[in-house]
Amino acid sequence: AQKVTQAQTEISVVEKEDVTLDCVYETRDTTYYLFWYKQPPSGELVFLIRRNSFDEQNEISGRYSWNFQKSTSSFNFTITASQVVDSAVYFCALSVSGNTPLVFGKGTRLSVIA
Amino acid sequence: EAQVTQNPRYLITVTGKKLTVTCSQNMNHEYMSWYRQDPGLGLRQIYYSMNVEVTDKGDVPEGYKVSRKEKRNFPLILESPSPNQTSLYFCASSSFGPNQPQHFGDGTRLSIL
Image 1 (cartoon, rainbow over the protein chains, first blue to last red):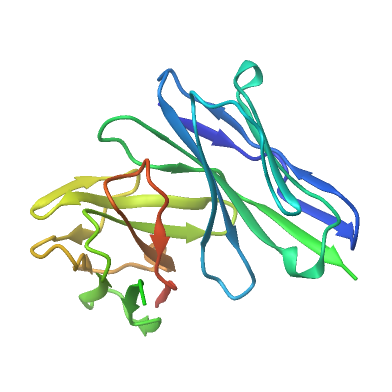
Image 2: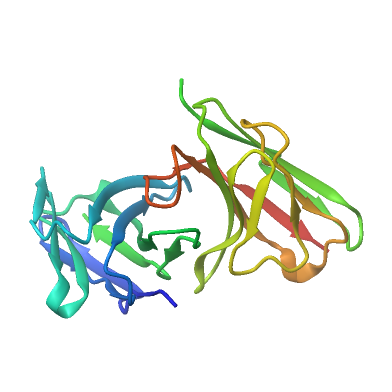
């Protein structure tokens, strides 16, 4: 069975600090996909990134970066120079090939204080 | 505008009174799914559908029904709601399956008294 663990329930940082959100996954499949979603205080869920198991290249998008390491089964998300607008709940998710449900972690609530 | 539309957004009802939450997408997506979000538990999948007339149980299907008679619609039915189904519900869709980015509706907050 698949599992996603986000050990950090809540994180609080001061604006302009860098922050890393951890995501550890478990699967026996060799083909799988990892995702990050953002849920701001308004409640909607916003897709941020998808990464497949064959692409370990790290990705950077503006202040956001993602570090995928198969050796440690981790897909961590770093926000550089955090801003108040980054305050949200962030979910990591895992899907595998075939007809199986998408599995989400329990989420990390990030509060960025001005 | 590409979107997933859920209705109602909020509902307060009583135990045992059948209710339906509608979900519609205008992106011609094949895959649709329902999730519930509870504090401390994250998002858990209730049901999903790979295409018209094809539905499957997710992780927490008990007490729910779905149907997929048309590609664009995927209603969630609570035949006899109970207080433990009080939750925030999200419908989502994607092109071909769970391996694609999901487009989520705005959510439906259900309170069952």
